[in-house]
Each structure stands twice: as C-alpha cells, then as structure tokens.
Length: 172
Image (cartoon, one colour):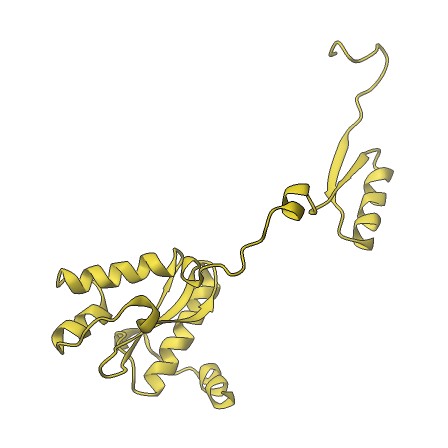
C-alpha cells in the first residue's frame, strides 16, 4: 500500500484512449463495464496547434520505390529503399565515382560512358512506401513495367510473367 492510499480502498485501474469520435465512446463503455476508469486524450496538442507547419517536406527524405533514368539513353533502373531517396541515390553515385560494380545504374553509365546526372534530373519517385512486403510488390511492378517497355537496367533474373501486372499496365 502506498502512503497516499487509505486502508480498505482499492486502487482504480485506468485505461487511456485517444478520442476519435463515436467509436471511442462505444469502446470506452465496454471498459467501464469491466470496472476500468477511462481517461480521454486528444491528438490536438498545443505544440501541434502553435508550431508552424513546414510548407513541403523534402520529397527525397522519404522512402519507397524509385526510378533512375540515364540522361543519355533514357534506360531506367528501378529500385526501392527503406531509407531516404537521397541516401540511396548517394550510394548509386558513389558506385559510379569509384567504378564499383554495386549498382546496375552505375554499371550501365560506366560501361557506355554515360554521365550520372544530379538527383533532381535523374531520380523519379514512383511511390512513397515504408519498407516491407508492400514495397517489394510495388518495386516488382515498376521493374516489370520498364521490362515490358524494353527499357530496364535491372537484372532479368527476377522478372517473370505476371498477368496482374499486365492487366494494370493495360489500364494506364
């Protein structure tokens, strides 16, 4: 028993909820029936309300699927990253500068004496997405799209016929 508790008094158990509307009321009523005290909070904290919001986030700070296009021949490498696009682009750029065979995009540029352009001219963000199975599928789709146009720099070992991708490509 803590010093603030009185003898014979039980400790109340609390359940905190973020209020999002009528659904919260329904759920909290269930907890009240289970002898839990409810405390509601909100997402509208003072800091969020008073701090200026950035006009636009740097699109290269996010993660997802991307396409690197060769400035000379327009061949494309499709990739994904769970880190920032900027960081991943720097890795491709370093492979080009150091003549390492760690990037199909850099390998193509070096073998054909093509330049490697700056990020804003070279990378196109295909879709923003966090790392995981969903991103893997998105990357496969965009690789398949470039492969179907005979325009890809990715290895052909991971490209297999896909009727779903074919149907999606016919729609666009």
